[in-house]
Length: 204
Image 1: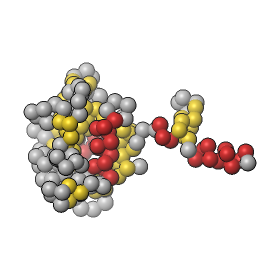
Image 2: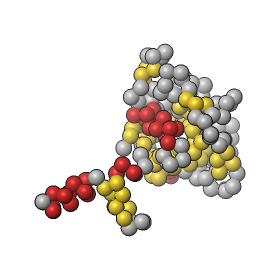
Image 3: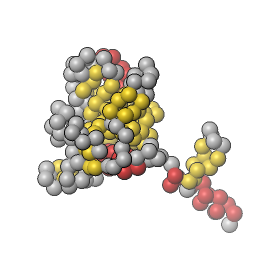
């Protein structure tokens, strides 16, 4: 009986080495992955993002929902998902990658997995410290509390400058892939020299 209870406990918990304690799986942050690369051929590799549900849970869940692609928008008749989308802005001057245009692929087609196309979140600070690996959900130009599917990933290590948006997670694996993409295919104005896409995206 004791062995059975022990197995059940371990199946619902995860041991965090840094804290030296068991954590219930229900309390762990969610993970999202991107397999990134050129439009054709094998992906360059996988990028894993750990969502930060403690900061803005609704926006983190919005991002995860798009990653899973489980919402078909009634107005467009298509899944709202990151799989197949383009990194439409790769800036070598700002050291960042932008994606999430689920409709047009040019930065003008952000769409949230809700019927109104955008998602409104109150009490959002639009100022985020520029920290390497941060995943930022991009707000509307006209309303800083309105979000869609558009996001960008910061790769700058220079420090204290502030950027617009809401931080929803951190790249915990594969950041070197993104840095290589910026180095090889980024430009000062952000227009990529090669078309790079998210081959596959999902919820871990």
